[in-house]
Image 1 (cartoon, one colour):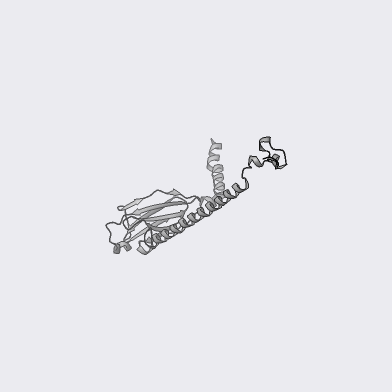
Image 2 (cartoon, one colour; image 1 turned 90 degrees about the vertical axis):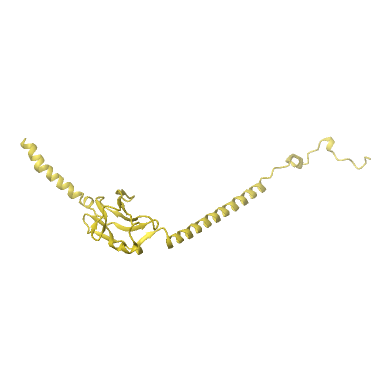
Length: 199
């Protein structure tokens, strides 16, 4: 019993401290999130999107006039990114809120090891699918389509020319002009030319 007590109260604790020291850089790693405000259309909820943070124990919420909101809010789940960090989104429904009151709202991100990140709801800072972004996306899509069509046309012309050149080089040899006839071999009697003395 004394031996077990000594192991669990001293040796085991010493080993844990040593292992925690080895993994300190990983276990205590903290990555600061990047926070964006997103909105698909003027009638859609405003999304507070935090990404690139580590660890995944994060709290993201909306508040109005300094008070945390529980209504009008749709929290999302924390999801992994391809680089080992995490992301989360929290929607805020503003259908009944006039735009001049949006400044009373803010998104707050809390992550252990960093100070709170507060982002005020400002229409100028919201990324949307409309407006100039929509026009730019339309233009870029058009340019991409034209480039693809041009590439297909060039490849088509190249393949067509290659096929024609191949056919010219591999024309079938006529049986009447075979190598045997071209070497002066006598033709069959019915194909012999008439002599000049015959009528």
